[in-house]
Image (cartoon, rainbow, N blue to C red):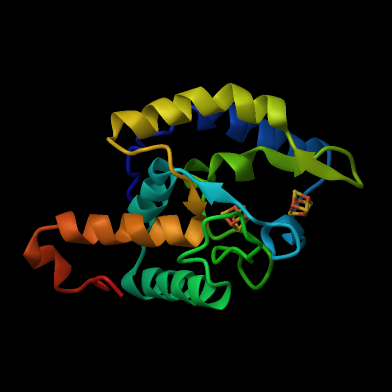
Length: 180
Ligand code: SF4
Ligand code: SF4
C-alpha cells in the first residue's frame, strides 16, 4: 500500500512504540474493542486528525473505502452527531465486526493511541502521554490552517473527505464516491 506522509505523524511515533509494548507486555486488545463502542466512546478529534484518516481512506481500494464511508454516514445518522455540540456517546465507524480497528496506527487519533490497558484487568486514558503529545498535534493542526474545533470522529472525517474530494482535479473524481 502506498504510504502517505502524515502531516501530524511526528507525535505518533513514540506513542505507537508504547502501544506495541503494552499490547505485548500488559494485555492485547484483540477481541475487545469496548472503549470504541457507545458504552464508552465519545471521542472528538481535531481536523488534522481527520485529514490523516481521509488521506488513508483515499489509498484504499474503492470498495473498501466506500464501505467505510458508508459506515461513517450511518454512524452520524444513527447517533445524530451532525449537529451535536456537546460530547455524545457513539460506536466508532472504524470498529470492525471482529472488534479490531480499521485504521492503521499511523493515522489513529491521539486519544485512541493514549487509551490503553494499564493492567491485565483495566484500561484508562493515559493523560500524561496525551498531554505531552497534544502541543505537536495542535501545532500541526494550526499549520494546516485549521481552527481548534473538535468534532466526533465520523463528523470530522466526513468533512475532511469532502474537502479532499473538492480539492481533487475533476478527472480524478470520476471514479470516487464524491460527496456522499
Ligand atoms: S483499551 Fe481496553 S477496553 Fe479498549 S479495546 Fe483495549 S482492552 Fe478493550
Ligand atoms: S479509530 Fe479505531 S481505536 Fe479509535 S475509537 Fe475508532 S475503532 Fe476505536
